Length: 165
Image: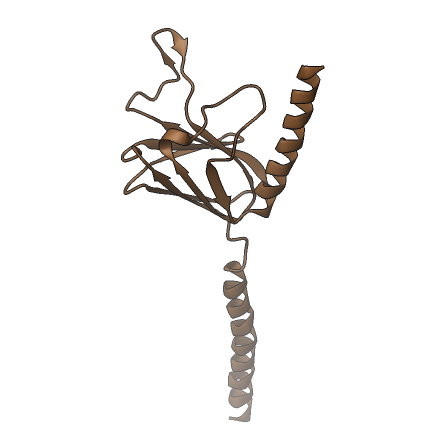
């Protein structure tokens, strides 16, 4: 009989030693990066408009409801993200054989919780000159984006000075 008790005790010890390892693994699985969350508050004529998010090879979309939208995801590194708002049901960028500019909001973010607040009619159209006016758009929650805006302001001053020369 003592031999049977010894085997039972050994099995209990082995299963007891494995249980904490499994518990720690399960707990650590939830400790990874949380990812980004972009919440948007768009005033004005924005109801049921489609918002597209683009970065790298990634594209997703959502529809504005009650002036709000939200995107979530996970980035490996901070990236330039573009939010493009389509003003009507036509999703193409070409109409009447010409390119149509869309209201866009460029953000430079990482895995952060970001809030974007703007009025639909005051969001600048996409531009190709490298200068973007953030004066009527409020972006909070991203120190990465704050640095990007400072950088772009400096580049804008350089471009303007170079153009005046």
